[in-house]
Length: 191
Image (cartoon, rainbow, N blue to C red; front, side, top):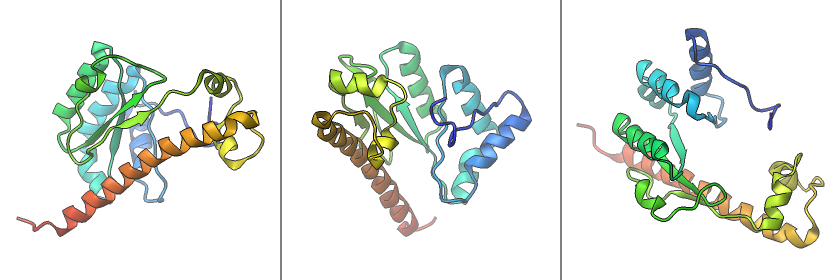
């Protein structure tokens, strides 16, 4: 609905759909892949991932899966996050604290981050004026970034540009942590 030229709806209810999705995730095309899971597909996706032994195959192809988990105060989400850590000890699971979605005392304690990646992603809230603009269709961050006439008043352009840079910087740091991890792994003596 939001990215019709770059997004595809995938189904994992049958073997054909599972193969179509997971085969595309390990295609060596130098393009990042994002799987946006709703709660209805969450358990099934990770069950298939385990059943087909996806992690070793992805790593054999020099692909490092990373789970960006949107932190939320609901117990179901907290339990799902902990369950992923139990099920996938070697999977990078990065909590994302989106202040525009959820603010809750003690939320960071419910989503401990561990492993290779030392820091979670923090998405700061937008000001009410910017939030209204961003939530109004057909706003597009990519159109705004390209300077192609997104409907952002000049007085708010700098604020939105600064917000985007802060968020992008965190993803860049995540990418650098991944590269550093790969370098360390390649230099470590093998048993």
